[in-house]
Image 1 (cartoon, rainbow, N blue to C red):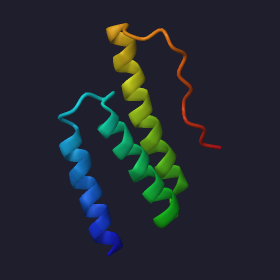
Image 2: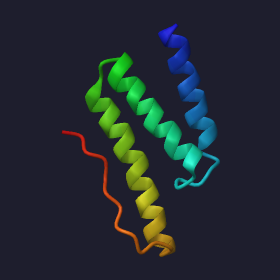
Image 3: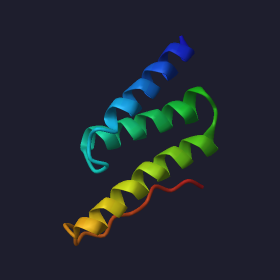
Image 4: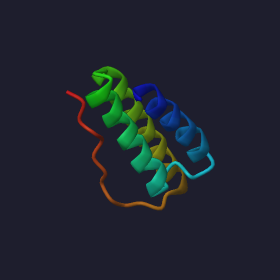
Length: 78
């Protein structure tokens, strides 16, 4: 069952790459997948790296487009 969930997450992540990195569905999926890694697979390092990568990609795209003037806090992975 865990393997099926992981396969589904991987497929969803691949499909979500057609969306902008700032799209709420893509960001929500990244958050959910990172929680799956943390809680189910007991892999906090991978969870943080995955969430940080999604966050960093979104911030980079926002910075490039210069559409934001809001301060956004990165996720805390301590």
